[in-house]
Length: 72
Image (tube, rainbow, N blue to C red; front, side):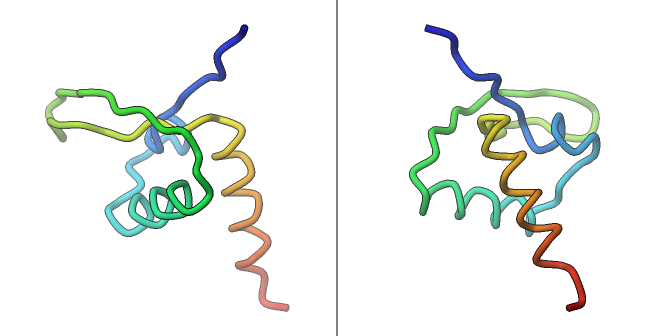
């Protein structure tokens, strides 16, 4: 059985997501019962636990978010 790639929002977006976006993604994952894992990180900007999400979930989440941002 192949385990799906898990990514942090930082890994997926290539930049820090910020608290607001991080909370929105995490809440959406909880509501939709998406399996998440946690990872401990330590770098000059942040030390602590981060959430890791399945790549397919993040692909869908950000695909839908971009469509929702359209002005029409």
